[in-house]
Length: 150
Image (cartoon, rainbow, N blue to C red):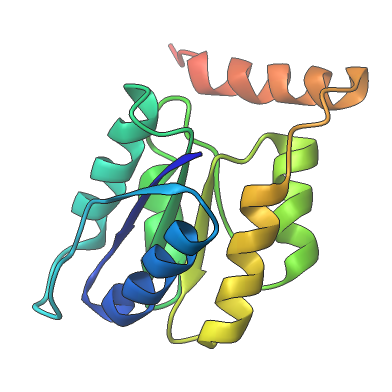
């Protein structure tokens, strides 16, 4: 699977390890930066990952910042992006299975690398179930995204 991955300066070290994990597991990581620990703004990285999904260059995305929250907020402003901060394995796979989550957000200052590896594996291994109840809810989420307020 092609996976866009990006991090701000706070998530740089964790990103480097996750890129290696993805490669070792047979995936194709698309590393969209940052490529050093120099300060960078998380919305810029979220945009790069989101655009990779929107244009079909990747099927899923992973964003890493200090808490995961900023990246999640920024990514969710983009059409078609369903990003969530997950710091437990259940949410990392259930978000895909029930909600068709396509971007996993991690907080490098909140969790350690071993838990991050488990979360990434759970996220990448999961598939949207697509049962009627989940599809109905996803359709409603998409309606919210497309709704215009007068």
